[in-house]
Length: 479
Ligand code: SAH
Ligand code: SF4
Ligand code: F3S
Image 1 (cartoon, rainbow, N blue to C red):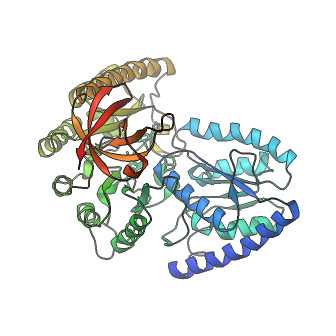
Image 2 (image 1 turned 30 degrees about the vertical axis):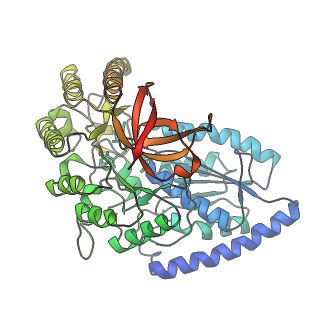
């Protein structure tokens, strides 16, 4: 791994310029190869993990398309890249499994480039394993130097040896590189990178580095550009958006940023992820209430309902504080949808601790919840804690929790039946072109009769029938 000092000697502007030069160079290589093969070269980007990775992949695609690759249907492509996640062990196993297949594809197409990047590559043991046992992988890089992708592709096309370039950290944020969005009408927007919270189970701070916020003016400029390009919904992304702006030269709060984004003309909806309960301020609740474009939805990870476990998790709130916060939010914004993340089987979790989690779930009545089985991540404090919970015990608790969460969730969706709510028309229904598919503020899907020209607008839609995971509806009138 390389350190900071040797590498970050260019300014962000110089770096962007340099990367565009590499794109020109790579373009020539790709064009020559395509000519030789008598067909365009293709790529496939396979993304694991969270919205951060999804957004990073859009940056990878932006560069691959700029340099002349065209998107393939599947992994039978000339350039295959896996953008990996390592938050839980099973995420890692998936990648090793897939690599087996890729080596077979490569036997048929020896020119194929196989690249790996993302959070998993920030772990030295993973890189060692790739170096030793996966020699057919051409390129490995991490989360901190993703902005150098064009340069790394050049190096890769110039050399037959395995290239590994992973940095420990970076303080740099490079703006204005190409991005190719997956959806025309909505986009993620990074407002910050990294995390400083060190929840004791979590590997993210180790693989994503310290918290760095983007300048508000850069964020606003990016969103204005997106709106001009047809985007009507943005999701502001950060591991803990509530601590946005603290490390800027001129500190700004997340609530202030939200108010600025809300002013952007043409933008229809604002979402954000993730809010850490410990930092959720009254100022933010006020801003959410005041800003008409901010969706009535908050993802508020609980992790555990037991104050004892929360302390061991280093979450800095307890059960009562969490419940008080939920009350305060619901009082200010009564119809808000609440969703959460919960971990089952953290070291030392007793049946009583688990019951506390069940109690919070019942009391809060989440619209939906992501439930995870605790996964031991080497290098995190929880990995060496005593009292790791046996698999059968975890499985039993997990099943009980999942059932509770699903029962509440379906009850909550039923409650909306018959109601008229704002819906963003997103696309023509895949199976029936007389229907438009749209989303509620709480992210649920509704299908309703409509035409293509409605896409990108918000309509008041009556939810006539709840079909479990989606609704069938009808436009009431134009919002
Ligand atoms: N920054 C966000 C999300 C980070 S990862 C937050 O603080 O909420 C997404 C979710 O993965 C976490 O909320 C947590 O529930 C889960 N998670 C993280 N580490 C985990 C681990 N070691 N085992 C199981 N689940 C984990
Ligand atoms: Fe992980 Fe906690 Fe940071 Fe979220 S806030 S990324 S759970 S350390
Ligand atoms: Fe996974 Fe990295 Fe996101 S570890 S959850 S892809 S920040």
